[in-house]
Length: 438
Image 1 (cartoon, rainbow, N blue to C red):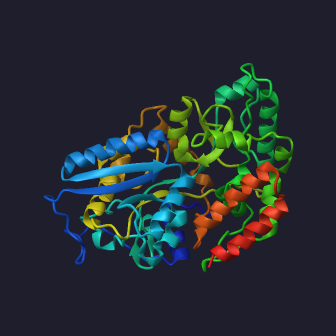
Image 2: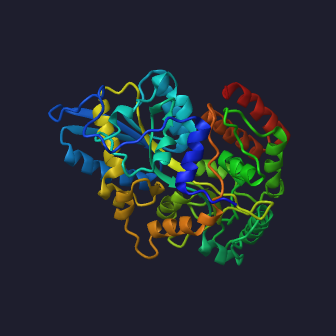
Image 3: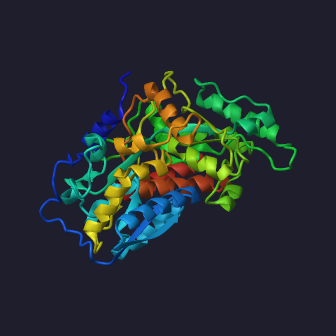
């Protein structure tokens, strides 16, 4: 099978999205038509992101450096968990009051690109925003309709995280490297059964219901040889595919072997895995830093995703996040300056390490402290270890992706509470998706 490097992944995304190719780093100044920053003007930029307290602390440290280098600019910050973050952005977009600079996700880029909600950063590619060290194909993942509306900050891929200490308490071994989805189900059931009588009275669960996350469904589809979305932006899978995936964990739900959804909601923005009540969790590899900080467990390990029916894992790299500017910002040049600083400053690379994914620029990758056993070193080592399993391009989000992803999450909660069936889940999701993906 063909191995996809980050560049190949970006090229595939560019082709499927019909992205405009952009490059930067050669211009001596922002292109004609770009606003110019006035170093003597006192201004305030609003900057927001999603994440936990660990990410907030890193951003605040980085922004202190930016303000020290630009004493005329004050950066006002805010952050939320992922679902509430997008609810807030939707409200702001309706009032054309999006923040000056925002952390952005590939899933929402297409719909926010409409009606000029995002600033076209193309005029600033060059000295304003130096993208010379950003892979051109990766950069293209933030371009739509010949406009650069997002600058990738980093990349990541999926992983299975687990707590060795919790497994030791239950006496259950972690999955083998070539484990399947069925093997993982057996692992979850075994841990939950053994952890039901934990000494401290708090049960230990094997994991959460992984079928409740849309990106995990996409990973499973890719393993079945199904390209989730067509190049024309259409859904390429059926209700039967969705019910089959949801059914993979049906026995775990029926046996109450997965982490309770009501307990998980009570813990937000944390979760069962981060409070050491659940032994494993699927997520993006850059979550290691946050998981370690929130749980206090420095021994957390990672495994690749389960093996598919053909014996291959069929993994993919994804731009973990981007930085965008609000289309109505009154300070576009300064917004571009902040984006440039966050993707290129070496000290920012040291501060964040791999907590947002492997940095997109070499200068920040070189600045990371890769001490043996450190979080950064372990994430880099993980991506190197699974590189041969990365054989597929990232599924390219369609218009309305953020909405259909949110609808999937909403229905998954209802399924967990038993208020709908698997068949009703798929039927309702496709009915809503027909309205959202247009």
